[in-house]
Image 1 (cartoon, helix red, strand yellow):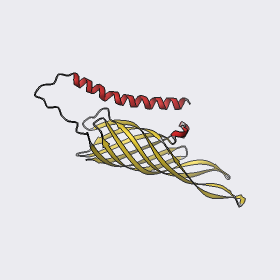
Image 2 (cartoon, rainbow, N blue to C red; image 1 turned 180 degrees about the vertical axis):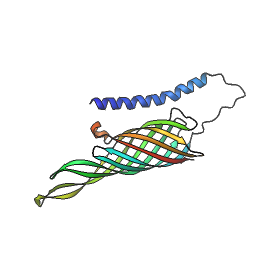
Image 3 (cartoon, one colour; image 1 turned 90 degrees about the vertical axis):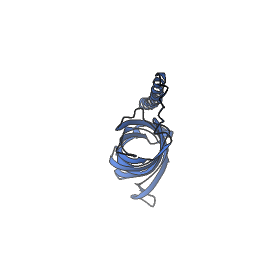
Image 4 (spheres, rainbow, N blue to C red; image 1 turned 90 degrees about the horizontal axis):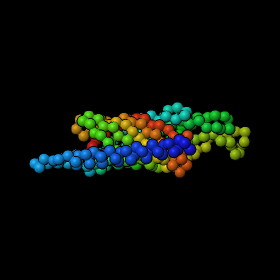
Length: 212
């Protein structure tokens, strides 16, 4: 319960900070006296689209797996953008079977929607963070008792659909022209309907893309 409250408080705090920083910067800029002959520069990121590809590792209690993603991004302005990112991943888990502790690989297809906040943009790199939600289809195989022969076990296919929530953070860097690279880490709660930080896992990786 303490982890749940702490995680939710952290997400809300970071999100509100991301909203407040651009507003504070805009207010400060507004307070400055502008020269009459100066033409205000338009936001170069507003109403642009991006396409990205990425991959990385998945950390679980039983070891490491991997995840790959593609993403479509809409830039609202220089501070905020929305990203829709389907993908595929797999990672190991331990479970109790009739023969004892076994390891199986979870495979999953996530489709996530995230709100990314970039509070500061430097010439060569920019830190970012943001919350997100999604839907993920999981499937795996595990050993169960054979209904026709209780002394034997058989492999049984399982599947489940969950609705995760996550918080991501990292750094993106411009590598010339419209091309960008990014590295980051994401903490995911697999099912918001049954919130439990014990099931949370970390995804770390890198990506690249182009902004149109």
